Image 1 (cartoon, rainbow over the protein chains, first blue to last red):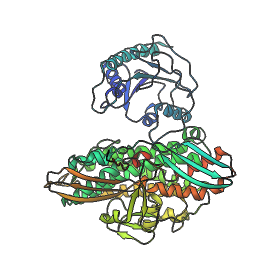
Image 2: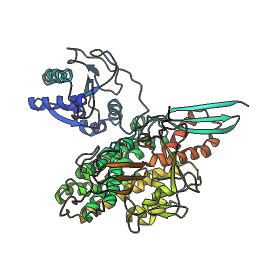
Image 3: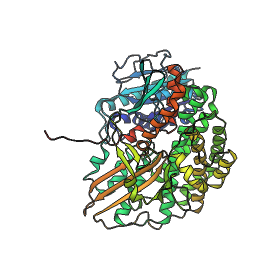
Image 4: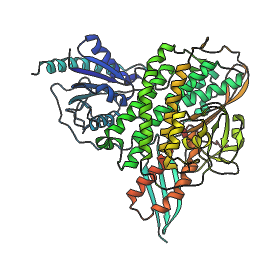
Length: 169
Length: 429
């Protein structure tokens, strides 16, 4: 059994926000890793607890240059990066500093949840977040073709990553 | 005389966008404004012309944290308009799903939003490093609340099963059996949470306040009964708008509310508790007594304790409902559509959520009014700050900000709910 857990975060009914669950579905079909989906990021804490290696896939709408490093996390996870059209091959950034967001609302954002999981001691040592930039998030709208392609790229990358993990001594 | 305006910036750990502005003249507080700048959302306007049976799912979108409150208030209003009597089992299920929402909302607020104030942390994340057991307990309780909502409502966020006349589908006894087992450890968690909350350093603050909540002769109120107040009023739900008036403040995208003859008033856990303490479940009532809560809890900072007591009640009554549950013969009542008007009111986690609708003979909504709990509390929150801030004036600005935010969070405000509508006047050109 693979030591990896893949978690898709998002809502399939909200266009590109569904990329996380879509990647999870593709990975499940390929039977390479345990898979889970969550609609609310806070649920991640229970889902990831007890695992050694987790890949979390979510959509983002940030106006940043994607495909490059994006300093997202300071929570002890090994690597964070965002991606478009698949993560940069062979690329890993180090853990970056990030100001903790204190204006948390009733809905906790993904990165706050990861910080919380780290503070609780349940964040797996090897945690990666794949973020796919979406273009539209309206209820009932179809996912864009670009994001569908990104989902396939992300799944391919996860396959490679999982093989590397399994191959590690 | 020197005047200082202190903007406390975007409020954190509340739902929605708002800020507090304090105007300090010399060494006196001259003005307080709880500025709500989250954009208005016009729900009442775009309900007009929609079918009566769309109201539950449309209004549920007003809030992600208390969709059940909007669904139940809207279906009860429509059922009154159409003269529909629901099955007792359906009524019990509605209480159960509503308790799921209370548990989820209270657990989040007690443990992750309000607790950091009392323990001296800027947020739950930094508190979790030193007090992981508190956060984990909150997450366990929140999850249970979510599961209750999902079991009955189909999903935890914006559940979909509530409908006019009943539910689209109802669970079997077996569906609820697993949850029943989970309620046992959850009750232990809730009791522990209440005991812990009572040990917190609660600031001394006893403002005079008028409390308004629903009241029922035999049940801790959720969605049936009358509107009652601590100044002795008891009104049928359809008289609500005669006594409680909405009005616009220039600094707020959300309407404020006042009680005729009494001014600002307060809804929410303290109001429910103060007006219905004798109807708490046995364990919740025993805890309220053991923790020496006064007959009338006036200190808004004690709301964290009262929420914890309500959580005990919600779990204990949920168990009773599941034990007694028999699925109804029909999940929903068939009904004729005709023109009518009806009101509905229910006790959202933050207080009473009032709806009134008028529908035509085709079932189209021609009028909608929704009065959410946070909008009713806004004037009361400002009044608390007027009384609370003078004692803080010698403090550094940052400490004053923290203490003011704590006072605002006593009400667990949901600004996104409150801004569902703003009065809009179009002047002739």
